Image (cartoon, rainbow, N blue to C red):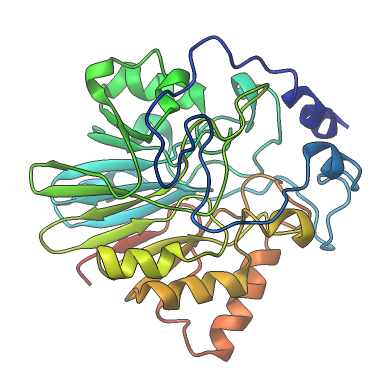
Length: 340
């Protein structure tokens, strides 16, 4: 019952070591808390979720979350000048674009939780070993949940590469080990430009929470990354909402969209914050993206769906709607060439 206990311990994790975000009220900030573009209804409390059957031991799927071996890719595969995207695990991608190397929500820890020692265990190795990473120029972090803002991994990245970290408003409170000159906070729709790249922080339908007293005190979102020849949307963690169409209208349709599909069950708890497979297809269409890659499934047991339940359901839907060539279901270590 270790993971079940972890849920209860979350409420005991202190988060007041650093001051919460202070700023003027805006469309997504009331002066104290951040909020979504669209109401998501009353969120079920963590205590209400604890009344459900334990995720790890009672999946709604017949599958069990068990360790499986994967073939990690060789670092020589990355020694290319071609623009490429490598799926590492969960919501972690290595994006090589116009000479820059960008990591999204990096997690190499064995567990997703406080200190990298508590919480659900991964069921496979990352698709690329940490020591085989190329020099990292940028790290984008969508929000503060443990499976997206993994401090042990971020500390290793900071020590080895000293890249630029880009986060939403209010998230620097968790990242005091990063030089403030290389830590950039953005509000929704704001952007930064570096050497031909433009990176927007865009809305998502989600929430933030890391421990006691910090509910929605930091901003969540996704990243729209533009180069001279390619555009990639990393949508972060998100539910359905008006933001997909807004992104298309305000910035444009991405060439490639990275869209979450997993940890979508039980639906009564996950619907306000996580897309399911059918909703991921709706998001793909709302964005007008040329291609998409699924993410956020199969690595950590975060819902009652089994390790391949989301991907199998998505595969069936994509076949039915003749979208299999445009919306890919990746395996750890899969490489997508952006210019092909």
